[in-house]
Length: 246
Image 1 (tube, one colour):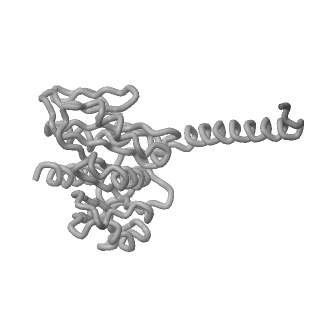
Image 2 (image 1 turned 180 degrees about the vertical axis):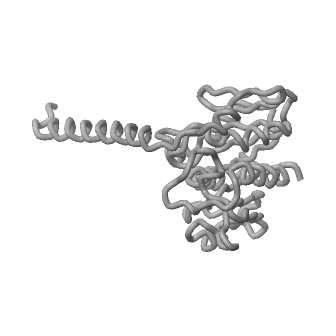
């Protein structure tokens, strides 16, 4: 049966619009992405204790066999390597760390990225999923639908969406966030606490900015940090290690 001409024209037009939209999104994500800066790029180099590989995923593998792993979801429109400083430092303590690059640098387009990583490293006994900003929200979506796959969840200046409430979950949760004069920098942060388990651990870093969780430069609408990049990275690393290695 031949389709009417107007149906064919409509189908071709819709396909063209979709293709143009995808191309536009790709160009926008590339031109709008915050690039990794010198401190992060330096942390992307292997050391005597950690081997760094940058292929389909970015991995920080300790020289000694690891049994605990972290999967990290980057923030929206942030180059994944920007998070290398803290994650490399964590790997130095014998923990495998994997950053999952995302389509268009937006983690929401692949919330299930952790699943492939878990399957790639069968020797890891304990998995912790972490994410910054939009990456944290995407991580929460994965944790909500796959609670049996991970043993812990960490938010960096982030919180779960309403559709992925973890309030009734037994998952261990850590939330690290920046404050100014004791007040969370992220709007509506306090209103989302009830989306996490009652025993979730909330740890503020006074003077921390949103962008300084990584190293990608100033971010629009961010607060002015009152601590240095190095100090914020050190505090995040220490808080993470206390959670991972009680």
